[in-house]
Image 1 (cartoon, rainbow, N blue to C red):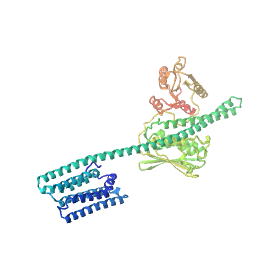
Image 2: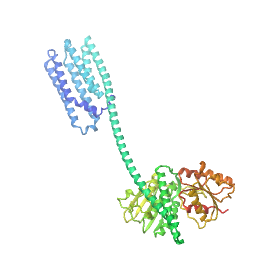
Image 3: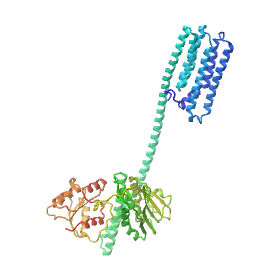
Image 4: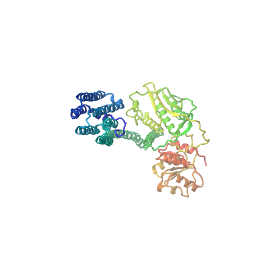
Length: 588
């Protein structure tokens, strides 16, 4: 900054200091010539001539320095301190040329010439303040170089007038320094204001650019969302249309074989729609950041065994070799969300592998373990790789063949990995299969408490044993259609069903004590599932096994259900999961 003595000037200040060198040199030579004329009769002409020649030579060197600075335009920014020192040296040289002149132009008896000399030198120094204030060391060198020799000369003369002139020279030097500092502060403030204006302009430009990018992203997101909603509408209408036609067909007279076929097809459509709705809800929860990871330490092999149990039969039915490489690694992360990621990756691998193998394994790499799902499937072209994590995108099936899945598995896996802070990578070539991988941090083994119970059923693959025991089940559901459907399913399994639309109806004294409760979360009059279960258990005098069901399986509700020790089943209800719950309860 120019306001700090000794600090190197910036590029703009250096340009100002060097730009006026030629004109300043010419003016200085002219001033020296006219000043010397006053002493022409008092001082030998030879001395005056030699001084003027030396003065002109110093000024020529100053012009040369300015020219060298202009020629160094490409390299000067790397050497500002060197050019600043040259400014000080040149200012001192020019000042000493004036100071030496005050000794050459010696005529103490000629008061007119003496006063003209002092006034002229004071004017020279005062005129340099505005120029040299860009670099205070140069101004100080100039003032000392001019007034120092002049004051010494006056003191040497020794007359009272010259003593006063010497004092005036010292005071003038102090005034010049004070004025220079004030000018330097003004220059610094002006430069700071200019920088602020430039920064403000740059900030406005960045903000405008960010606004343009945000608008473009919003437009792209809107277009993507519109395309996504159109795809969702299409995929929802397809199974709904089939279900409506099949339901109509079931109302017509038909053979038992025909009814069985239509019922199986109807069930397949319902499962397809349920999977689509569940996938969309999970994506929306991930996009809304309403899922909070709960990291724990667990054995990776247990998660691998879960994948083997879930997908082994499916792979075998397709004729694929599904292998799980054993591992002793323990990792840290949200086990449920990681299970969801691996489930989607393995399911995707099995779906797009017509023959060959699907392999799940983990390889330790330093403090991490790389978990990969490798298959020998159709592979992915390089042009397709950027789009495989988009919703409703199927390779080779732009029209979305529902027999090849819903196109949500990889999109969900990517969002889950983003939520967990994991990078999901993919390597693939057409005809040579694909390899999806993610890295998890290794952790020390953590003891698992024996007999730990699972209190949420939202992500489990239930496998029901044949023939649930005949039970008396109380269904507390305010939606008439869901209540009737649950009743039909339970009665079909041989259960005695008590159906109620409200807590008051369920607590009627004529109802016998049930063996199990199936309770919706949101009930009439603001009653919620956990408090309804507590009220029913209190009325029946027994901790009746209870299952909560809800169409809003948010992480908050899951946490509240877990805190109450109640399993939670999301809607649409998978019949096999409901059956698994009933099978786990003892017969009363």
